[in-house]
Image 1 (cartoon, rainbow, N blue to C red):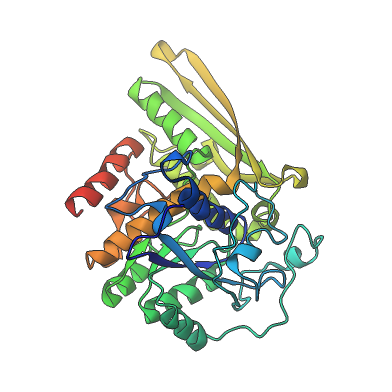
Image 2 (spheres, one colour; image 1 turned 60 degrees about the horizontal axis):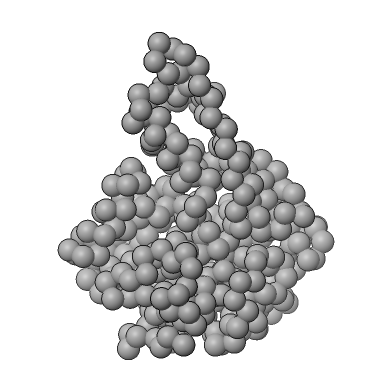
Length: 369
């Protein structure tokens, strides 16, 4: 088994759902297999490997996770992601009871228990108590995996991180790294922030952007496009309430618009979650269509169906982001880390074409940004 480096990256997880489960499994998987691990993005970043991520605690509200260890909570309902590495007993960090705020939509409590949330009766920690916990844990990085639409909850935990001196990786579409007010708060605190809203390792957004870039490269004019996604995990059930979707649609749409030579009219682009299909569990199926014109105005249409396990797809990039956050801390960097965010997130502080963004990440690691 791969040993942790002398300076492991002490990380706390906010929201111990499917993405967290894949992250927990992924750390143990990389430690167990080392160089033989499959599908690892950036195996070495500035001397840090995925095995160096030390998951020291989690925050959640579900009765089946609060009070358990991270290893135990990884496979607790309603988590339904693929179990690709089940030996996770080494993750003994506690799952602590956070506040509900807007992290739990009312419809999530009305669905079957194995598909939705059940609130813990343990008292929620206050802000002061969470800040104290973060300091006692000597946490260096906080990664946020709360449900889509958790604006107040994300802001609450970000405030806790700022007060406790913890860098943040924001994996969901609440705009923190890309919001000037929050950017200034991180500058003032001397802490790095990476975000917002992960692009999956091989997901619908990166595929859609690649097709749009290919069309531009070949001189094809795109007239209209859609990306329709269905899935069966708690994220899709949560997003079945349309009121929680505004930032998610903006994040995904802007990620594709940024790859277009000319922005499409709002009526000509539609991107976002479309339906909840319980039996899909953590599988996400994406349908992508682009309609455009070739030389002389000749028509062309592209249709793609992508079928992926959703949460490992995000956890692969989370392991990159956590290490980049640590590198930024090591260098004393503060505020949004644009060079580390553009390749990994849908709504970063600065949109960069993906091939260029890949090179920017490597330059950031190798040359100090």
